[in-house]
Length: 483
Image (cartoon, rainbow, N blue to C red; front, side, top):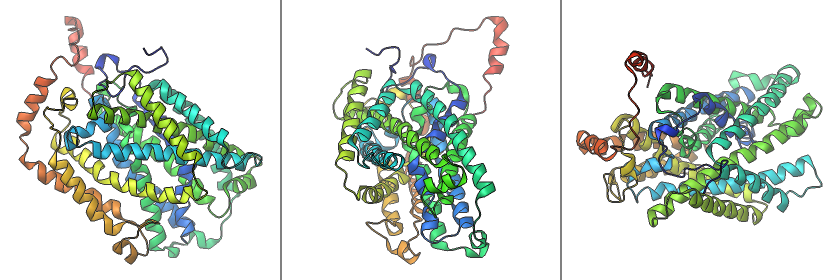
C-alpha cells in the first residue's frame, strides 16, 4: 500500500475529486527539465559547424520557439483527460497498436537516463579530477537519488523541480549578466553577412527536435490539475517554462562553445564555472527522475497491454525499479565512445516521435476535439479496437517520407546530403503525418462515437453536490473558463 509520501495512482484515471495544484506549477517543471548539461550541449552545434554567434543564437531561439509550440499543446491534454501521455495514444493507434510508440518511448526514457548518468560521471570528474570519469559510485548514486524522487511520484517531482528551478535561475542570471558585461567577441561573430545555411539549419532543427522530445511525457505532469484550468493557461505556463529554460541553457552553450564551459565561466567570475557545472549536474538528477517516472508509467502500460497486471502503486514501483536497473547497467557498461554513438541513436528515436506528435495533436484538437472515453482506453475489445489502421498508416508513411532528410552519424539521406548535412526531417514529417491522418479520419462517424463515449463514462466521476440556490449564480460564473 502507498504511504503518505508515495503517489497512489499509476496509469489509471485521476478523478476530478483528487485533482489539485496550480497551473503555474507547470513552468518550473519544464524550466528545470531543460536546465542541465545535455541541453547545454545542444547549443554548441551551430558554432561547431562554423556558424557565427549571431546566427547560431538566432537558430537556437527559433528552434526552441518551434519545438516548444508542439510540446506545450500536449501539456494541455493532461488536465482534460487525467491520464498519462502515452495512454492517450490508444484512440489513434488502438489498444495493442499503441505498443509501437510505447516501445520507442520506453527505449528513449532508459537511453536518455543512461546517457545522463554517463554525463554526470564526466561532470563530477571535471569538478573533482580525483573522481574517475566513469565512477560507478556517481552513476549508481545519480540513479538512486533520481529513482527515489520518481518513486515518490507526481507531487514530490513537482516540488523538486520548483526548488531546482529557483537555484538555476540564480546561477544562470549571474552568468548571463557577467557575460553581457565582460565577454567580448570579434566583430565577425555579430556580422549578419556571416550567415551559413548548414550550421543555421542544423542548430535550428536540433533545438526544435530537442524541445519536441518532451512531448512523450509532458501531460504526465499536468494530469492532476483541475480540468477547468483551461487550455490557454496550461499551454502558456508549459511553453514559458520549457522555452525559457531550453533557450537560456542552449545559449549558454552557444556562448561557451569556443572554450570549455568551466574555464569560460570562471574567466567571468571566479568559481562561477564550478557553480554552473554543479547546477547543471543537479539538473541531470532532476531530468533523470522525470525519465524514470515516465519509463515506469510506460512499462506499466506495456505490461498491462500484454497481460493484465493491475494498475497499482506496487506495479509502478516494480516497473520503476526495472527501468533504473536497466539504465544503470547500460551506463556502467558504456564504452568511451558511448556519448557519440548513443547521441546518433537518440536522434533516430526523435525522428520516430515526429509523426506521433502530429497524429496525437491532430486527433485531440481537430478530429475528436477532446471527446474520448477514459474507460474505453482500458478496454481491449472496446471502442478504439486493438489496431487502428488510420494512425498506424499515417505514422508509417510520415516516417518513411522523412528518411531522405535524415542527417545523423549513422546515415545521411540524399536530400540532407544535398543541403550540406542540414536536417529538416521534422518539418516534413509533421505536416505529412497530420494530413494523411486527417484524410483517413474522414470516414469516422464522430457523432456516433461521442454518444458511445458519453455512455461508457457515465459515473466515471461522482456527481458533485448541487449548489444551494443562493450559490447557483456565482457557481455558474466561476465555470466560465477559456478553453
